[in-house]
Amino acid sequence: GAGVSQSPSNKVTEKGKDVELRCDPISGHTALYWYRQSLGQGLEFLIYFQGNSAPDKSGLPSDRFSAERTGGSVSTLTIQRTQQEDSAVYLCASSSTIAGTEAFFGQGTRLTVV
Amino acid sequence: GESVGLHLPTLSVQEGDNSIINCAYSNSASDYFIWYKQESGKGPQFIIDIRSNMDKRQGQRVTVLLNKTVKHLSLQIAATQPGDSAVYFCAEGSGTYKYIFGTGTRLKVLA
Image 1 (cartoon, rainbow over the protein chains, first blue to last red):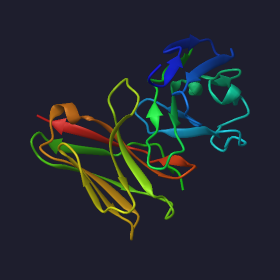
Image 2: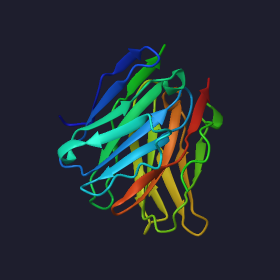
Image 3: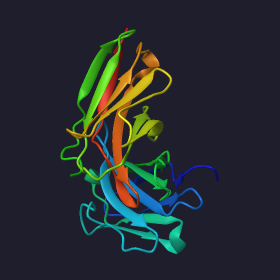
Image 4: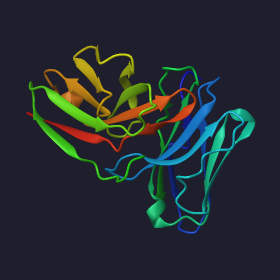
């Protein structure tokens, strides 16, 4: 597609269950980001992938969170044993490494843990 | 460094007035800066960008100013309209380094 696609757009899960969130970046973009945004709050960096380099996982809040990027394209963010405080919008963005090009965001996945 | 807090400061502006949203960036090596607008329920959308070899860049009703001496970026919106109500984020980047996003500022336009 022409933009960054995230699925599902909404996810309601029970506390303790695992969830997987998917991001399809713009074709050819080597950089991919995951951010979390709680209601009414700013962007919280989670993880950054750049080509074949080791990802920057410095923003992952706990070992319940993990992310993969297969084949340098699609990425999956997995949250294990979800907690209510994990409820938020999870945003994915991708960018080219061509200098002076912006990052493009998806519409996000709204996760609600009940 | 990256955002140190997630609380969104709020700027309230009367409709028709000019808005100025400020951002302090962290990396003196950053050479590309972007402003994003995020409306309720949507992902952030690109507004305007500026490279470090410029001090000012103008778009439609928006102007971005860059002060590299004090690592400060601002977004000016002329004749603010109700549709400008949103959260605005700045981002800094350099080559292959990851973008660093600011916490954001909520703009409220008062009728």
